Image 1 (cartoon, rainbow, N blue to C red):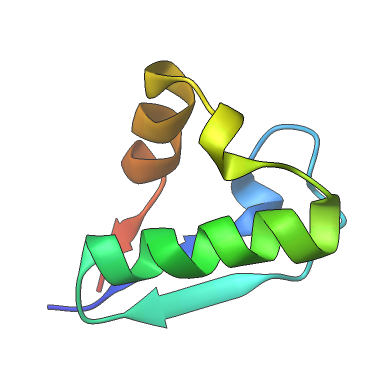
Image 2: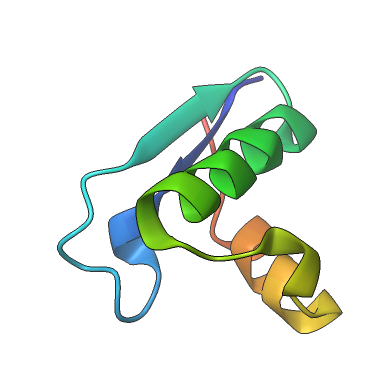
Length: 62
């Protein structure tokens, strides 16, 4: 089963076209981390456990 995350679904990121699909949720999270760093200037190492849980909850199984 594949998983998809769309950046525009995250509150405040509605204008972002980033979308990532991979075979596992862990793979998608790696793409999300790279995207957050390069496109949004965020440091994923600074994300709280709650931030990560929110991102994972927004992944759609497809």
